[in-house]
Image (cartoon, rainbow, N blue to C red):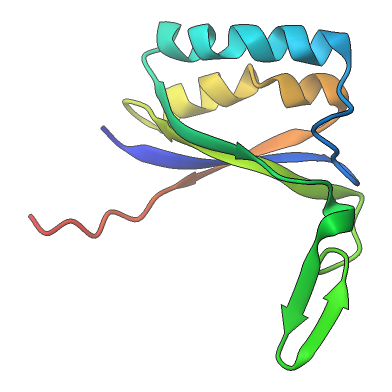
Length: 114
Protein backbone atom coordinates (compact mmCIF):
# COMPACT_ATOMS: atom_id res chain seq x y z
CA UNK A 1 0.00 0.00 0.00
CA UNK A 2 1.37 3.47 -0.82
CA UNK A 3 2.80 5.51 2.05
CA UNK A 4 2.53 9.25 2.57
CA UNK A 5 4.35 11.66 4.86
CA UNK A 6 1.76 13.79 6.61
CA UNK A 7 3.26 17.07 7.83
CA UNK A 8 1.23 18.87 10.49
CA UNK A 9 1.40 22.68 10.51
CA UNK A 10 0.22 24.79 13.43
CA UNK A 11 0.48 28.46 14.29
CA UNK A 12 3.88 29.20 15.87
CA UNK A 13 5.25 28.16 18.30
CA UNK A 14 3.11 24.94 18.03
CA UNK A 15 3.40 23.68 21.59
CA UNK A 16 1.94 20.13 21.77
CA UNK A 17 1.23 20.58 25.49
CA UNK A 18 -1.08 23.56 24.95
CA UNK A 19 -4.02 22.25 22.94
CA UNK A 20 -7.70 22.91 23.40
CA UNK A 21 -10.11 20.32 24.84
CA UNK A 22 -11.82 20.18 21.44
CA UNK A 23 -8.53 19.37 19.74
CA UNK A 24 -7.76 16.67 22.33
CA UNK A 25 -11.17 15.06 21.79
CA UNK A 26 -10.80 15.13 18.00
CA UNK A 27 -7.29 13.70 18.33
CA UNK A 28 -8.64 10.76 20.33
CA UNK A 29 -11.14 9.93 17.56
CA UNK A 30 -8.73 10.43 14.65
CA UNK A 31 -7.14 6.91 14.64
CA UNK A 32 -10.57 5.28 14.26
CA UNK A 33 -11.43 7.68 11.42
CA UNK A 34 -8.20 6.74 9.64
CA UNK A 35 -9.08 3.04 9.84
CA UNK A 36 -12.68 3.62 8.73
CA UNK A 37 -11.37 5.19 5.52
CA UNK A 38 -9.01 2.28 4.84
CA UNK A 39 -5.76 3.84 6.02
CA UNK A 40 -3.24 3.06 8.72
CA UNK A 41 -1.03 5.43 10.68
CA UNK A 42 2.34 3.68 10.67
CA UNK A 43 4.24 5.95 13.06
CA UNK A 44 3.90 9.55 14.24
CA UNK A 45 5.82 12.16 16.17
CA UNK A 46 4.91 15.47 17.78
CA UNK A 47 7.71 18.01 17.80
CA UNK A 48 8.70 20.29 20.67
CA UNK A 49 7.66 23.96 20.17
CA UNK A 50 9.47 25.80 17.38
CA UNK A 51 11.14 27.97 20.03
CA UNK A 52 13.35 24.94 20.81
CA UNK A 53 14.61 24.65 17.22
CA UNK A 54 18.18 25.27 16.12
CA UNK A 55 18.76 26.03 12.44
CA UNK A 56 21.92 25.29 10.48
CA UNK A 57 22.74 26.86 7.12
CA UNK A 58 26.31 26.30 6.01
CA UNK A 59 28.51 27.41 8.88
CA UNK A 60 25.81 29.57 10.50
CA UNK A 61 23.97 28.11 13.50
CA UNK A 62 21.05 30.09 14.94
CA UNK A 63 18.44 29.59 17.61
CA UNK A 64 14.85 29.22 16.48
CA UNK A 65 13.28 27.87 13.32
CA UNK A 66 15.00 28.09 9.95
CA UNK A 67 12.87 30.98 8.68
CA UNK A 68 10.39 33.43 10.17
CA UNK A 69 6.87 32.14 9.66
CA UNK A 70 3.40 32.23 11.17
CA UNK A 71 3.06 28.44 10.91
CA UNK A 72 5.62 25.79 11.79
CA UNK A 73 5.85 22.03 11.43
CA UNK A 74 4.39 20.70 14.67
CA UNK A 75 4.72 17.02 13.90
CA UNK A 76 4.46 14.36 11.25
CA UNK A 77 3.33 10.82 10.70
CA UNK A 78 3.56 8.14 8.07
CA UNK A 79 0.23 7.09 6.63
CA UNK A 80 -0.52 4.02 4.55
CA UNK A 81 -3.54 4.54 2.31
CA UNK A 82 -4.86 2.83 -0.82
CA UNK A 83 -4.30 5.99 -2.88
CA UNK A 84 -3.86 9.77 -2.69
CA UNK A 85 -7.61 10.42 -2.70
CA UNK A 86 -8.05 8.37 0.48
CA UNK A 87 -4.98 10.01 2.05
CA UNK A 88 -6.51 13.44 1.37
CA UNK A 89 -9.87 12.42 2.89
CA UNK A 90 -8.02 11.26 6.00
CA UNK A 91 -6.04 14.49 6.22
CA UNK A 92 -9.14 16.66 5.91
CA UNK A 93 -10.28 15.09 9.20
CA UNK A 94 -7.02 15.90 11.01
CA UNK A 95 -7.72 17.76 14.27
CA UNK A 96 -5.12 20.42 13.50
CA UNK A 97 -7.66 22.20 11.27
CA UNK A 98 -9.67 22.99 14.44
CA UNK A 99 -6.76 25.10 15.66
CA UNK A 100 -6.22 27.01 12.41
CA UNK A 101 -3.42 24.76 11.17
CA UNK A 102 -3.02 22.68 8.06
CA UNK A 103 -1.73 19.41 6.71
CA UNK A 104 0.66 18.68 3.86
CA UNK A 105 0.53 15.28 2.13
CA UNK A 106 3.67 14.04 0.39
CA UNK A 107 4.04 10.61 -1.23
CA UNK A 108 7.08 8.75 0.03
CA UNK A 109 9.68 7.73 -2.49
CA UNK A 110 9.76 3.94 -2.83
CA UNK A 111 13.27 2.77 -3.65
CA UNK A 112 12.40 -0.91 -3.38
CA UNK A 113 13.72 -2.82 -6.38
CA UNK A 114 11.05 -4.60 -8.37
